[in-house]
Amino acid sequence: MGKTKKRVLLITKSLFVYDVPVDCFDSVRNTVHLKYIPTPLVDKYPVLYHDSLFQSIKNKINAWITYDSDGDWICMTTNDSKQGINYNIDTSKIHKGFVLSGEWPETLIATQEPCKFYSIQRRKDKVNTILGKGSDLWLTAYKCKNGDRIIHSDGIDKVRDFKLLCFDEIDVLMINGKKCDSERGVQWPFGTGFVSDEKFFIIGLYIYVLSENVFNQVGKVFPVEEVSPFHFFNCGGIIPPNKVISKAYFYWIIAAIILLMMLLAIIIISVFVAHRSLANRKKTLSGLERSSKITLSKSSIKVATKRSLKSKSKSKTSRIKSSSTKNNSKSGLVGSRTSLSGRSKKATSPGSRTSLFRKSKKAISPDSRTSLSRKSKKAI
Image 1 (cartoon, rainbow, N blue to C red):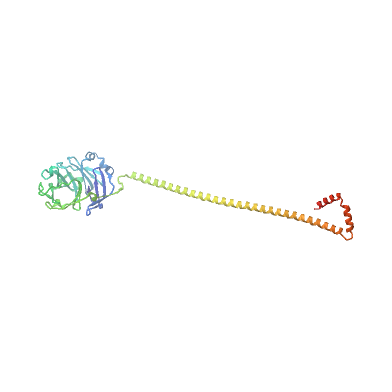
Image 2 (cartoon, rainbow, N blue to C red):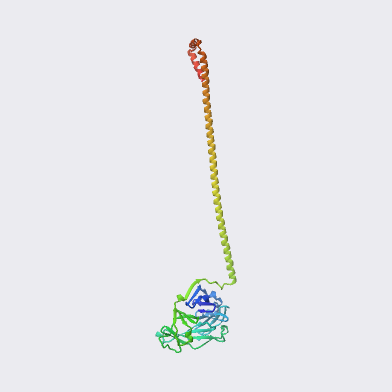
């Protein structure tokens, strides 16, 4: 892990890379906001990953992040005196790396100065460790040869010899001797670290925060702050913009997105048109149903009207016929009655009553009665 003027970079043992802007690190609160999810190193730095030398040492490297006038660098060394690699992040170019002595395992930590690094060695000391199982930490610094540009450096040289880190109760100091006069030597388990704002950030089971002056002021005690990794690493989990994709892939992705948007627009329009046509069909069907109902009701009203008119006319004609027949019968009866009454008046005059009576007696014979009844029936 390291911090430059532009970024904070963290490479895990499983070769995943966290790359966030420098303002994501807060040295006051002792926290770094890893707002992007990590990117596999093979995708982040493919030139470095596919290099044959990197493939041969990738499982046993010590890496640190630094910078100079040529850009930001990932520097890698091994503890078995093999050739290291210096990779320029800004130019994606690989350069010949540094070779360590390999006497003791050591981890290099970048400073805020170009081409200057701290180194922490782990040395086993049977005198100052319990049962001879611990490893005390020794501290020194390196500088590049031939100036302050990594690309021109033929290697690195020690600024001074390693010095032992010791505890003074809970504080830490660096001594000139080979043995801690107080309680014990510092034996922090750690994997990497960096320097920021004149403070060491040594990353292990905890993040040990210690003033950089512990190196410059030998014999002086400085407090140590232990920070939980859950507090120090604040992971946001946002997917970063992929800078590894080539322009051709980028254009293909843009074209695919545009095509998908067009297809989506066509689907939405077709669904909208189908919905509107269905709604129009429903309206048309409902209108037809209403008009058919109105037509049927009108036709039924007309039929009922015609039927009622016919029935009324029939009843009127029947009434007229019946009244005419009644009138005819009444007129016939009246006429017959009038004729009979006329005749009877004539016949019943005072002078003729006797002759009539006589004639009637003569006329009313058995045969004449029959003929008289027939005439009366006809007259009726």
